[in-house]
Image (cartoon, rainbow, N blue to C red):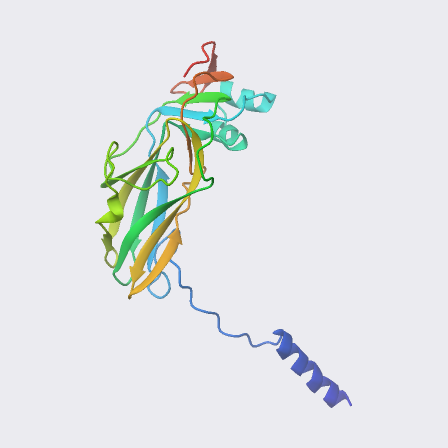
Length: 246
Protein backbone atom coordinates (compact mmCIF):
# COMPACT_ATOMS: atom_id res chain seq x y z
CA UNK A 1 0.00 0.00 0.00
CA UNK A 2 2.75 2.56 0.78
CA UNK A 3 4.27 1.94 -2.69
CA UNK A 4 0.92 2.44 -4.44
CA UNK A 5 0.30 5.63 -2.45
CA UNK A 6 3.71 7.03 -3.44
CA UNK A 7 3.08 6.31 -7.11
CA UNK A 8 -0.33 7.98 -6.98
CA UNK A 9 1.17 11.02 -5.26
CA UNK A 10 3.90 11.36 -7.92
CA UNK A 11 1.32 11.14 -10.71
CA UNK A 12 -0.82 13.82 -9.05
CA UNK A 13 2.16 16.16 -8.70
CA UNK A 14 3.02 15.79 -12.35
CA UNK A 15 -0.56 16.57 -13.37
CA UNK A 16 -0.62 19.87 -11.45
CA UNK A 17 2.94 20.80 -12.48
CA UNK A 18 4.50 20.53 -9.01
CA UNK A 19 7.04 17.82 -9.71
CA UNK A 20 10.76 18.57 -9.63
CA UNK A 21 10.99 18.72 -13.46
CA UNK A 22 9.55 21.85 -15.08
CA UNK A 23 8.56 22.32 -18.70
CA UNK A 24 11.01 24.40 -20.75
CA UNK A 25 9.98 28.05 -20.85
CA UNK A 26 9.12 29.63 -24.18
CA UNK A 27 11.84 31.85 -25.58
CA UNK A 28 10.92 35.53 -25.18
CA UNK A 29 9.74 37.09 -28.43
CA UNK A 30 9.84 40.75 -27.38
CA UNK A 31 12.64 43.27 -27.28
CA UNK A 32 14.16 44.52 -24.07
CA UNK A 33 12.78 47.81 -22.75
CA UNK A 34 16.10 48.74 -21.17
CA UNK A 35 19.66 47.56 -20.79
CA UNK A 36 21.91 45.82 -23.32
CA UNK A 37 20.34 43.48 -25.90
CA UNK A 38 20.96 39.76 -25.48
CA UNK A 39 22.15 37.93 -28.60
CA UNK A 40 19.70 35.07 -27.99
CA UNK A 41 16.34 36.55 -27.05
CA UNK A 42 16.31 40.33 -27.35
CA UNK A 43 16.17 41.78 -30.91
CA UNK A 44 16.99 45.30 -29.70
CA UNK A 45 16.82 47.64 -26.70
CA UNK A 46 15.09 51.00 -26.33
CA UNK A 47 15.45 53.65 -23.62
CA UNK A 48 13.84 57.04 -23.11
CA UNK A 49 15.17 60.20 -21.46
CA UNK A 50 13.79 63.66 -20.75
CA UNK A 51 15.20 66.45 -22.95
CA UNK A 52 13.18 69.46 -21.82
CA UNK A 53 14.86 72.82 -21.69
CA UNK A 54 13.70 75.59 -19.34
CA UNK A 55 9.94 75.34 -19.11
CA UNK A 56 6.94 74.65 -16.92
CA UNK A 57 4.93 71.80 -15.46
CA UNK A 58 1.19 72.23 -14.92
CA UNK A 59 -0.95 70.46 -12.33
CA UNK A 60 -4.71 69.85 -12.67
CA UNK A 61 -5.32 71.18 -9.15
CA UNK A 62 -3.81 73.69 -6.74
CA UNK A 63 -0.96 72.62 -4.48
CA UNK A 64 -2.79 72.61 -1.17
CA UNK A 65 -1.10 70.29 1.32
CA UNK A 66 1.55 71.70 3.72
CA UNK A 67 3.94 68.91 2.64
CA UNK A 68 3.76 69.86 -1.05
CA UNK A 69 4.11 73.59 -0.36
CA UNK A 70 7.09 72.92 1.90
CA UNK A 71 8.81 70.86 -0.82
CA UNK A 72 8.45 73.77 -3.27
CA UNK A 73 9.60 76.67 -1.11
CA UNK A 74 12.50 74.72 0.44
CA UNK A 75 13.89 73.30 -2.80
CA UNK A 76 12.88 69.75 -1.83
CA UNK A 77 11.64 66.91 -4.02
CA UNK A 78 9.66 68.93 -6.58
CA UNK A 79 9.42 65.89 -8.88
CA UNK A 80 7.52 64.05 -6.13
CA UNK A 81 5.06 66.96 -5.87
CA UNK A 82 4.47 66.76 -9.61
CA UNK A 83 3.96 62.98 -9.49
CA UNK A 84 1.56 63.15 -6.54
CA UNK A 85 -0.55 65.74 -8.33
CA UNK A 86 -0.51 64.10 -11.79
CA UNK A 87 1.36 66.97 -13.42
CA UNK A 88 2.21 67.27 -17.12
CA UNK A 89 4.71 69.24 -19.16
CA UNK A 90 3.18 72.52 -20.34
CA UNK A 91 3.36 73.41 -24.01
CA UNK A 92 5.70 70.66 -25.23
CA UNK A 93 7.14 67.44 -23.83
CA UNK A 94 10.56 66.61 -25.30
CA UNK A 95 11.72 63.01 -25.01
CA UNK A 96 14.91 61.43 -26.33
CA UNK A 97 14.83 57.81 -27.52
CA UNK A 98 17.82 55.54 -28.08
CA UNK A 99 17.46 52.33 -30.09
CA UNK A 100 20.31 49.80 -29.83
CA UNK A 101 20.49 46.85 -32.19
CA UNK A 102 20.95 43.26 -31.05
CA UNK A 103 22.53 40.33 -32.90
CA UNK A 104 20.46 40.65 -36.08
CA UNK A 105 19.38 43.51 -38.33
CA UNK A 106 15.77 44.70 -38.18
CA UNK A 107 13.63 47.52 -39.53
CA UNK A 108 11.56 49.91 -37.40
CA UNK A 109 8.53 50.64 -39.56
CA UNK A 110 6.82 53.11 -37.23
CA UNK A 111 6.52 54.47 -33.70
CA UNK A 112 2.86 54.78 -32.80
CA UNK A 113 1.30 57.19 -30.29
CA UNK A 114 -1.49 55.62 -28.25
CA UNK A 115 -3.57 58.32 -26.48
CA UNK A 116 -5.21 57.35 -23.18
CA UNK A 117 -8.39 59.22 -24.20
CA UNK A 118 -10.20 59.61 -27.55
CA UNK A 119 -9.88 63.42 -27.43
CA UNK A 120 -7.86 65.97 -25.50
CA UNK A 121 -9.37 67.33 -22.27
CA UNK A 122 -9.12 70.95 -21.13
CA UNK A 123 -5.68 72.32 -20.18
CA UNK A 124 -4.52 71.90 -16.57
CA UNK A 125 -5.20 75.13 -14.65
CA UNK A 126 -4.52 74.19 -11.02
CA UNK A 127 -0.86 75.06 -10.41
CA UNK A 128 1.96 76.12 -12.74
CA UNK A 129 5.58 75.28 -11.79
CA UNK A 130 8.29 76.90 -13.94
CA UNK A 131 11.88 75.77 -13.56
CA UNK A 132 15.30 76.12 -15.17
CA UNK A 133 16.85 73.28 -17.18
CA UNK A 134 18.96 72.20 -20.16
CA UNK A 135 18.54 70.06 -23.28
CA UNK A 136 20.56 68.26 -25.98
CA UNK A 137 20.78 68.06 -29.77
CA UNK A 138 18.99 65.07 -31.35
CA UNK A 139 19.85 63.03 -34.46
CA UNK A 140 16.33 62.40 -35.79
CA UNK A 141 13.60 64.88 -34.87
CA UNK A 142 9.96 63.85 -34.58
CA UNK A 143 6.98 66.08 -33.78
CA UNK A 144 3.41 65.23 -32.74
CA UNK A 145 0.33 67.38 -32.04
CA UNK A 146 -1.56 65.84 -29.11
CA UNK A 147 -4.51 68.19 -29.67
CA UNK A 148 -5.44 66.10 -32.72
CA UNK A 149 -7.79 63.10 -32.27
CA UNK A 150 -5.24 60.72 -33.83
CA UNK A 151 -1.75 62.18 -33.31
CA UNK A 152 1.11 60.85 -35.45
CA UNK A 153 4.76 61.80 -35.84
CA UNK A 154 5.48 64.38 -38.55
CA UNK A 155 8.77 65.63 -40.01
CA UNK A 156 8.68 69.18 -38.63
CA UNK A 157 7.03 71.34 -35.99
CA UNK A 158 4.59 72.87 -38.49
CA UNK A 159 4.64 70.04 -41.03
CA UNK A 160 1.76 67.77 -42.05
CA UNK A 161 4.02 65.13 -43.62
CA UNK A 162 3.99 61.90 -41.62
CA UNK A 163 7.53 60.75 -40.81
CA UNK A 164 6.92 57.02 -41.12
CA UNK A 165 4.72 57.26 -44.21
CA UNK A 166 7.75 56.93 -46.50
CA UNK A 167 10.61 56.40 -44.04
CA UNK A 168 11.84 53.55 -41.84
CA UNK A 169 14.73 53.16 -39.39
CA UNK A 170 17.13 50.32 -40.17
CA UNK A 171 18.88 49.06 -37.04
CA UNK A 172 21.99 46.94 -37.58
CA UNK A 173 23.66 44.65 -35.03
CA UNK A 174 25.01 46.77 -32.17
CA UNK A 175 24.03 50.01 -33.92
CA UNK A 176 22.64 52.95 -31.93
CA UNK A 177 20.10 55.41 -33.32
CA UNK A 178 19.15 58.53 -31.35
CA UNK A 179 15.81 60.27 -31.83
CA UNK A 180 14.12 63.24 -30.23
CA UNK A 181 10.33 63.33 -30.01
CA UNK A 182 8.44 66.54 -29.23
CA UNK A 183 4.83 66.16 -28.11
CA UNK A 184 2.93 69.46 -28.29
CA UNK A 185 -0.38 70.66 -26.90
CA UNK A 186 -1.80 74.17 -27.20
CA UNK A 187 -5.50 73.73 -26.42
CA UNK A 188 -5.92 70.64 -24.24
CA UNK A 189 -4.27 68.00 -22.03
CA UNK A 190 -3.56 64.36 -22.79
CA UNK A 191 -1.74 61.30 -21.51
CA UNK A 192 -0.47 58.71 -23.98
CA UNK A 193 1.79 55.72 -24.59
CA UNK A 194 4.42 54.90 -27.23
CA UNK A 195 4.74 51.63 -29.16
CA UNK A 196 7.46 50.73 -31.68
CA UNK A 197 6.43 48.62 -34.68
CA UNK A 198 9.28 46.67 -36.27
CA UNK A 199 10.01 43.79 -38.64
CA UNK A 200 12.62 41.10 -37.92
CA UNK A 201 13.10 38.01 -40.05
CA UNK A 202 9.96 38.87 -41.97
CA UNK A 203 7.75 38.98 -38.85
CA UNK A 204 5.97 42.12 -37.65
CA UNK A 205 6.21 42.77 -33.90
CA UNK A 206 5.71 45.57 -31.39
CA UNK A 207 7.52 46.94 -28.33
CA UNK A 208 6.09 49.45 -25.79
CA UNK A 209 8.48 52.30 -24.95
CA UNK A 210 8.79 52.96 -21.19
CA UNK A 211 8.59 56.60 -20.11
CA UNK A 212 11.74 58.28 -18.73
CA UNK A 213 12.33 57.64 -15.04
CA UNK A 214 10.15 59.86 -12.86
CA UNK A 215 8.18 61.20 -15.85
CA UNK A 216 4.93 60.13 -17.49
CA UNK A 217 3.89 60.56 -21.08
CA UNK A 218 1.51 63.51 -20.68
CA UNK A 219 1.35 67.07 -22.01
CA UNK A 220 -1.01 70.01 -21.49
CA UNK A 221 -1.58 73.37 -23.10
CA UNK A 222 -1.27 76.53 -21.02
CA UNK A 223 -4.40 77.80 -19.27
CA UNK A 224 -5.24 81.51 -19.27
CA UNK A 225 -4.96 81.61 -15.48
CA UNK A 226 -4.00 79.21 -12.69
CA UNK A 227 -5.06 78.69 -9.12
CA UNK A 228 -1.44 79.34 -8.16
CA UNK A 229 1.89 79.89 -9.92
CA UNK A 230 5.32 79.02 -8.51
CA UNK A 231 8.56 80.09 -10.20
CA UNK A 232 11.81 78.29 -9.54
CA UNK A 233 15.41 79.45 -9.33
CA UNK A 234 18.73 77.82 -10.18
CA UNK A 235 19.01 76.73 -6.53
CA UNK A 236 15.83 74.65 -6.87
CA UNK A 237 13.76 76.83 -4.51
CA UNK A 238 10.29 77.91 -5.69
CA UNK A 239 8.48 81.08 -4.70
CA UNK A 240 4.79 81.82 -5.21
CA UNK A 241 3.97 84.48 -7.80
CA UNK A 242 1.06 86.85 -7.23
CA UNK A 243 0.42 86.90 -10.99
CA UNK A 244 -1.61 83.76 -11.81
CA UNK A 245 -1.05 84.05 -15.55
CA UNK A 246 1.59 81.78 -17.20
